[in-house]
Image 1 (cartoon, helix red, strand yellow):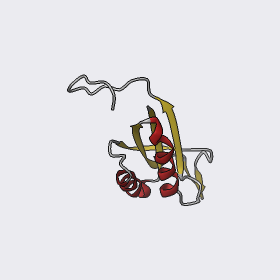
Image 2 (cartoon, rainbow, N blue to C red):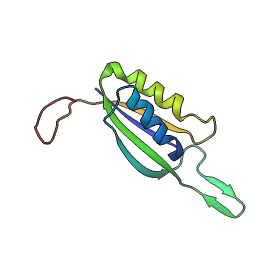
Image 3 (spheres, helix red, strand yellow):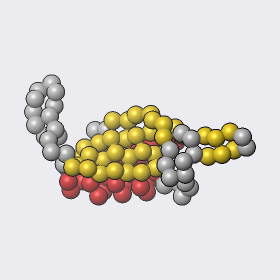
Image 4 (cartoon, rainbow, N blue to C red):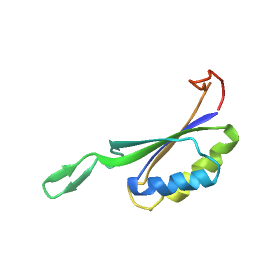
Length: 105
């Protein structure tokens, strides 16, 4: 299993969620977050903006679903401008359902 964390533009989060659902990736957690990337903010006149609103999408998928999931996020979330976001993929050793104690997705 893999955990995918995608930090994307807020205006792209809904369309990404919809595309993932169409592809069968239905379990996801969505959080509104703030952050900055390589640019370390933006200077407009005397005002320095160092954090921007983003949405973090988190999901755990089976290994064979990883590439498809990342591809959907990258294609759907891309505007071609600085600040489109990042996708992180990490291993998941185990997952359990709280209600039943059942292991796995």
